[in-house]
Image (tube, rainbow, N blue to C red; front, side):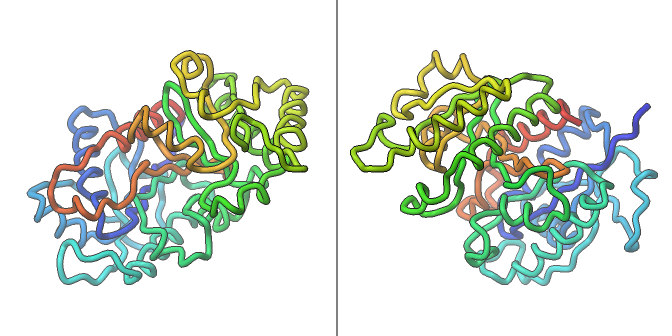
Length: 329
């Protein structure tokens, strides 16, 4: 029987709802005995204990001691690599105080991922403003940059849902810069990466829709992105036997017929496709980074500081992650 590599979970922002939802999901998995691979958390054990005590919750953890871990001997249970984090209260205001702590957690996790000791990374929600300091557009680009090997030239953000997924060509950049950051090569590379993920991990040859950039895919300007960039990219993708269609106007695309006919929609910018997607599905989605030698996932919401310590946060997005992992691992 093939030994499954451990799943790594970087806990992310200390002052968030993630410990609450993670404990609920992991306890449910443990009770139902659905865990068939080791799970390794990377974060502060003291912080976890303090937050769970405040929430009147429990989670059984085994500490991994030492710097060189033999992952082959791990059982199918939940472990933690303890990272020191100084705090006064279980939940504090989100500031850049946590930056070094989160960086250290990522560094530890990426060491094992880069050495192929693990093949899937989940990270908890992170305040991009405090953690990234404008050095990266988002966590997608941060993890991609930190990985020592890539299987694609560009990181690809895939917001996955069983009915239909979406993927923006550009991610967390100002709207005024979008047209400067799309070209044929990027579209072809990212669509190909999405197709490869569906075929290799989900055993599906996906049908992919591609949107235009301009309203109704038209413009009166001298440079038409649909004509000069998007349509030629689609033509080249079709020559590669990839099932693509478009360009579609986003204002009418997200109707029931189209949702049922496609596996993924690739848009030109973040809010163009994330807004209709979340209007329909809410947080019933998984944020995936493709283009790496491992799969990186995160919940499709932020730290939700307004809800910390209240024990009322939805576990739906994290449940979706574990359901997807059971399909691909």
